Structure formats: C-alpha cells, structure tokens
Image (cartoon, rainbow, N blue to C red; front, side, top):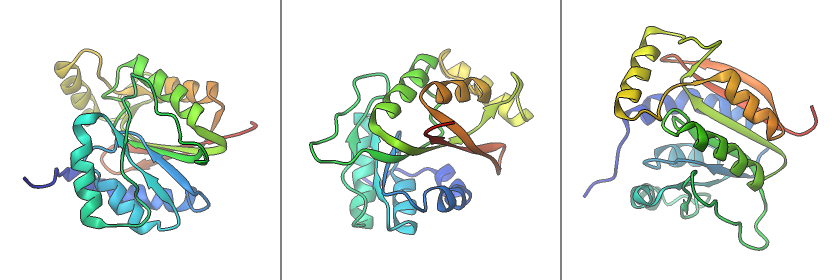
Length: 203
C-alpha cells in the first residue's frame, strides 16, 4: 500500500515555507497539530534542519505519517504523537522542553467550534512563554467570505457535517488573545488562503 498523498500539500508547501522561514528561524521545537499525510513535516523538516518538527494527529492518520517520515529518514522528525484535539492532550515526557512554535494547516474549518477552543487551550498548555503560532487555511473576515471559492468551499464543508465551516478571523484572533498570543502577521497566500502568525508574550 502506498503512502497517503495530498495534492493540496504539494501546492501550498512553498508559500507556507516562505512564511515559516521568517517566523520560525529562531525556533527549536515545533509541534504540528493535524499533520495529515505527513507531507508538510517532511518538506519543512528538510528545509528547516535546525528545527525539531514534531508531528501529531488522530490515530487513523499515524501510519501514513510514519510512512512519510520513514522514507525521508530526517534526523529532526521524531515519531508522531497521538493527539485528538477534542480529547486529552498528551503530556510531555520529563525533561522535554516546551514547544516554542506550533503549526497547523487546514484544520480549523474541519474542527467544531468547541474543538477550535480546545485547540487554543491545548496549545497554551504545551507552549513556552514566547512561543509562536502559525495557522494556514481559508478564513472569513468581518463575517463575510473573502471569495466566491471560499463561499463554495464552506457550503461543501457544511454539507459534509454541520459542525464544519470557515472560521471568522476575528473570532479566532480573540481565542488567541485569550491564550496570551498577539497577532504578528496575517499574510495572504494563493487560492484565497492565509498564513496567520501569533506571538506569545506581553502585549
């Protein structure tokens, strides 16, 4: 059986990497929440060798992630963690440093709103005092879709499950602020997506 493959990951990796090169240049330990196929971890782990890139996802995705990591055989991509955002988050082993960066791509519109809230609570618990958080995906702004394509995508998501849907950036930023993160950059990327970066610490 072949490795799982996401064409979207292949398309968006380069523009996301351009953002991460700037904001994660001085980071050490990155937690990726919702690693999916594992393609981003391989691409970013190879391009940013000074980072330890820690994958995580629900149980059904771990074998695919392991396959990508095994083929790449990078020294900075440890085995993936089991992490279900809506359940109990993992505890770090004794002596393991807190994560100083978190990345997630195309996940908030798949989660329920309560899971988005749990995401920020979990990230806050696992991060150190000056951590950075980068989230990639499509967002609404001011309660409105930013493109016809995003409106169609939202309708498709809601047809799949009523808990899914594009999130308003203002609401997400409010959760980030409550968790101690301040907005650092909101960068538009291709196909009506954005990569939004927050910095934890004093405002």
